[in-house]
Amino acid sequence: MAIKDRILTGDRPTGNLHIGHYFGSLKNRVELQDKYETFIEVADVQALTDNFNNPEKVQRNVKEIVIDQLSIGIDPKKATIFIQSMIPEIAELTVFYSNLVTIARLERNPTVKTEIAQKRHIFGESVTYGFLGYPISQAADITAFKGTIIPVGEDQLPLIEQCREIVKKFNTIYGETLYMPKAYLSTNKRIKGLDGNEKMGKSLGNAIYLKDSDDEINKKVMSAVTDPKRIRKDDLGNPDVCMVAYYHKLFSKNSLDNICAECRGGKRGCVACKKELIANIIDHFKPIREKRKFYEENLELVDKILSEGTKKARITASETMKDVKKAMKIDYKI
Ligand code: TRP
Image 1 (tube, rainbow, N blue to C red):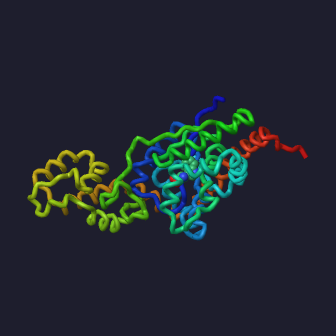
Image 2 (tube, protein in one colour):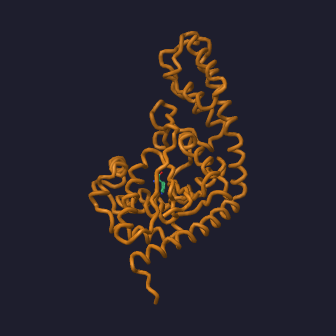
Image 3 (cartoon, helix red, strand yellow):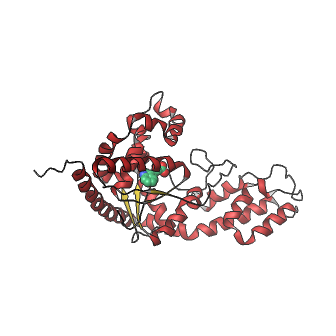
């Protein structure tokens, strides 16, 4: 089946987006919306699989995540932004697809396996049916909207693989109905945290958020880990082990060679170096923060974008539902 490629991606509304997301995937998303029809899901149902006991958190973050996206340049004229729980077809598809996936296969999914190990404090000894099965629900997210290109980070590859298996099995048993998705790996690598940790993450407390104020950015960068061997300004520095130099690579491209040379030569103090980085980060995010402010002051516009996006998404999902029910011989004409 040849159709025009379509982007489908989603975010769990569990927290604000940070510069790890920004350089890792969001910038890419903004570029892709010019090339392909784009659907972006606010995955509130998925967020509830491991936050079922904290619905306020999910509720609070739905609009936050939409404002984050709009402020970085996702254009509601090009991209359809919608809320997962408002598309009942996703839940229906999840039920149908669950016949096509074994428990053993779900338990083998490396992403789910890692997450279960990390979430013992939530699940205790035995994980919920809902969480174990969220890859099935994610396959419903993707196929309901005929997503063929799925921009994700590396950790999501096993989920896309699982979705592909479901599509293959469905089409083999019931006839060609669903579109085969492909993961689109962002070429940007993972962004390290302020503390030098390989991952920037909310739970790690080492992230700079897109919505951070000047003051917060200032505090965070001042606390970033630098070359531990460098004590005095004229000590020769090693930018390769310094998080400030690491972020200069992202925010100070034009002066990077100079910054590194001065650091190696002991001609640049860490405090001045941090101040320069702070100014560049603030400068870089200025237009993004202005846009954020605009949407925060016009929340009814955010509602309108979500409502129109969800309406449009629902039309596509109901078309898929029709095809699926027909293929599964449950399209009763009564
Ligand atoms: N699981 C994804 C994450 O944690 C979010 C997500 C939900 C998603 N549905 C999706 C990603 C569909 C891609 C396609 O980041």
